[in-house]
Image (cartoon, rainbow, N blue to C red; front, side):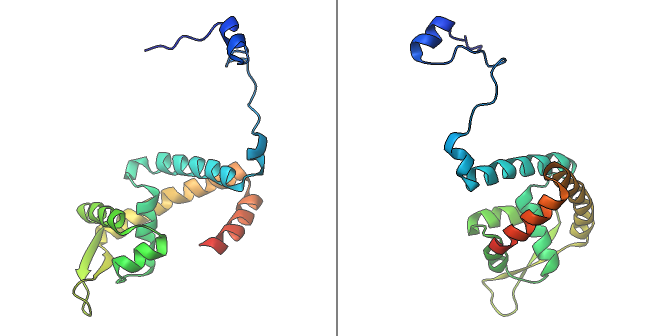
Length: 164
């Protein structure tokens, strides 16, 4: 359904600017200009949209990529340790791991020391997929550096690593 635009007289009566959206300049951010979280979120949205677009052929989301990299760097570690490291809640991690297992990219093995715990490993297919994913992610990182500038990207990484 197409929305009708209010006429100038309706806009005036309601206190709205009569300037059409096509002719309007950018809106002022006001106090948002002083909120770090606002700008971090805007950058995050850009980063995620670009990541998802570049990795569309692999159908990998940012959280899945993070999990694969942590498993690669820490083979045989428990689901709980990986979830805690990445700040992913247990139920969400279980669904994410189920999808990676369905794709045959990871295997969950019962822990030798604790039957309630599972150790995670990349499969051979997972290693191949991750190599391709990392290549695409490198393209994404290059675009990010281009978007924010190489020096500012380095500065951001240095600042934000403290919260990792």
